[in-house]
Image 1 (spheres, rainbow, N blue to C red):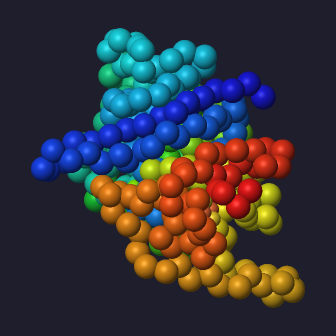
Image 2: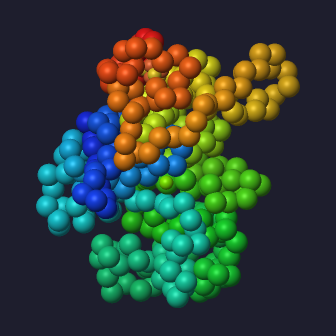
Length: 318
Ligand code: SF4
Ligand code: MG
């Protein structure tokens, strides 16, 4: 399939107190094909949300390139970046905080359409579109004139999804869209994402802190640690054959639900905490917690390289 998003050597730094610099995203490269779901996984503070927000131009990149449909969006002017919102939308983690409590569902869903000048002067056309969107995300007609506080967490996330879909985007960045929901609701919302992907020809960047959450929805997965992408692979391959010691540890924490599976993974407990992203270890950022660390890991930054077809890892063991 055609490449829709191509990120090359993306870095994002923030100036923090004391004149120090936080390198939240550090030389990250990956691409996403049209119609694909790319899962981006890592613990909080690893840079996954910052990556998503930088792609959406909510932050300016410090270095690197972001090609969307073949165009480098970093080089676009303000007006072109604004127009990008008709192609790219974001769904946020917290369905409570991301919906304006003073607006009705209709007003919330209309925001993006209004901003882009869709249905200008066609109030009834816009309202019909809102009803169509509500139906698409599994909500009812009579929800249209209610306020966010009248809905459950799962329903609010459906409203957020309808809002994103309203402008007919090609690409959606979903930043931990199910983490704040009850476990019983999570699968329903994941199913909705999958159904909508087919109906609307969507491409997803699906961000999560837990590999089990992206397992079923992702075609490929990237694993981040302290601002770096440490492994990228097709989803099935990543679960069957994780190469990076960090990915192995993340996977070992997921219980295998099927008792017929004979081999169970041995639990790998990581030593220590994640170091401060303000002051990451030299060489391999993971070395302070890695059971396989050797001398060269202290001085040499491992580069992401393809060790099996389509399977990339940044580790000196390979
Ligand atoms: Fe461990 Fe070295 Fe590989 Fe880093 S490069 S994950 S420290 S073996
Ligand atoms: Mg986050």
